[in-house]
Amino acid sequence: MRISDVVTSTLSDINRMPRFDLTSPPIKPKWYLQIVTWLLSFPEVLAVRPVIRRHGMEGLKGPYILLCNHNSFLDFKVAVRALFPRRATFIVAIDGFINRESLMRNVGCFGKRKFASDPRILRQIKHSLEQNRVICEIYPEARYSLVGTSSELPDSLGKMIKLLEFPVVTLISHGHHLRQPVWNLKKRKLRTSSDMTWLLDREAIRRSSMEEINVRLKEAFSYDDYRYQLENGIIIDEPFRAENLHKPLYQCPRCGKEFEMQSRGARLWCGSCGSSWEMDELGRLAGEDGNTRFPHIPDWFEWQREQVRREMEEGRYKLDLEVEVDMLPNSSGFYRLGRGRVTHRPEGFHLTGDFAGERLDVKIPVSLSFGVHIEYDYFGKGDCFSFSAKEDTYYLFPVEKPFCVTKLHFAAEELYHYSRKE
Image 1 (cartoon, one colour):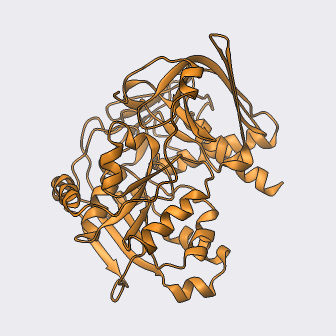
Image 2 (cartoon, one colour; image 1 turned 90 degrees about the vertical axis):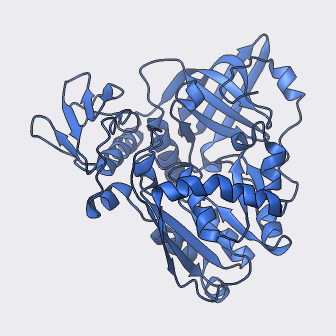
Image 3 (cartoon, helix red, strand yellow; image 1 turned 120 degrees about the vertical axis):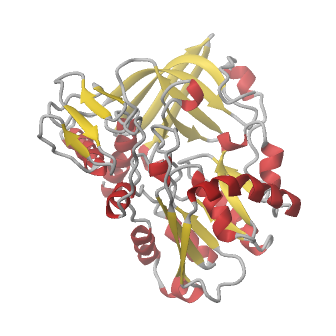
């Protein structure tokens, strides 16, 4: 089954399917498949000619944990270049295994359901480091950055590092979002750069608390591709450079209206009040009437987060949507049940549906997940969001328009922070 296929099924049929194996230990990458990995990665690496700066890497031998930021599929290919000729294992979301599970496992991949707490992953990572004796490559942000800035890291990351006591290296790449932003997958022409840093050795891990490690990680994962573009004078003159920018920037800062933003070419505008902006060749926005509130795209993005936070503080936030429900039980592909409803409240997500007499009722408490995964035009099927429960992942495609899944990105994170304070 192709990921783009819409295959209908019944809940009982899906429940009889085997679930994705999350317990088998990761396989040490086969040497001959590693050569294939190099051959597949190097053409695009040559196209962007990345500058890889290494900091304090002298003397680092043996397996270690490699933490990478996440902006596009180019991240994986540049990581292959940075590690060459060494091999690594990788944590990959379940949908990355569709139609190629055997191949993915043999090149060292092991699966996880996004934004779902799963203590089994610690054993998988430990096996990679101690038994396979290879680098374990992890993308802790667990999703592509929406506007080229750092995303939330799970608090459990510091705890994992404390328990494993293996050296930690970070690979922070710059320009990957600029080349192929998640909201518009057309590739731009530019060079990229990466900083590879030995962040923590065993002794530093032993003497640091979990909280101190998390602070170090947060500092290391501080990046901003649009600031990088401006500071380095990177010209992006493709005429489509702002197309679909209205997906991450869904709320008008002039009139405050949500889900009325539109974009085409290098322009962005509000369908409600008519305000418009142009994106220049250095990634800055300028109001076409001369009044520019947010020339820096990430500032507009974070302003929207503040609006969602204010809704929650004032008790106004609520979500009740009709959605098309797809289930992902294993690597065979997605199965569509039909239309259901999902609500999002301070308690978390609640998905319900009646499909040919079979009742679906799934609750995801806010305390169990620090975020929600969103996709823009997922393989031509539309914008969606997803979460996991037990051994299933649900991909939900909003039916009601207008709506933008980016708001859920903010809402899930802010509700999680609120629950932690409570």
